[in-house]
Image 1: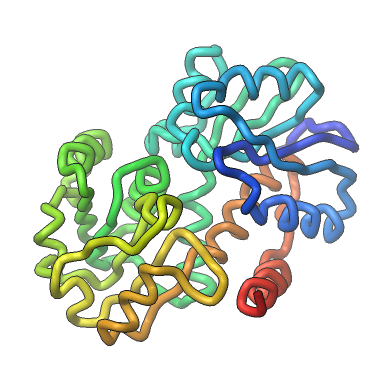
Image 2: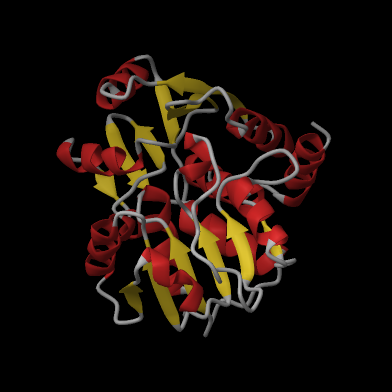
Length: 284
């Protein structure tokens, strides 16, 4: 898709908190690689001021935004309330992580699921078709992951959330017989081949309180967040004897490439950017 963006354009990632974001480094690397002339920064929005912050960014000539915690679901509602266009995958996820502004028109998309799938399959060699997947969490990140995993042909998607009603709501929204909600205490008996951590625990300060047996059978453990060297969830997995896993740095880079493609009409190469960030993080 041609982005229609001007030769030089302004982009940012909006969230709260946002100072930790690696997105400016990623998009600067993509711009250098593709010869694009862009500005990309961070935008801290008040928790009750997402819409006002976006409108101000548009009025100041902004061409597009990435959306991160805690605003992805708000962004989906905002696009629809504003009369903008929303992609099928964002609508299915109920969450938007990419906004594009063209001549007064607003487009909302969700590149998280595509980024997750590309990282799992291409970088980590995980064949998703036919897999039994347990997804921890039911927020915006989980919603984006869930619809992409179903689209890739997983055999079963079992969703557990510390607030069970949210897991059931997500299952209802997905409307797919392969998706079901399970109780938090039942995760260990779910027989996961792939265990995905998509809760906000990493951003609220600690390890998840997981029931016994979660890592039985040594599923591939994937944390959709990332951190220097490791995350609390991956540390838990390793301490329980699970040796196969990865954090979400690769997903971050892949979803950013999807956003860049939407904005600029060209897909950048992700592996050199991922390797550079991995070295920076692991050396921190």
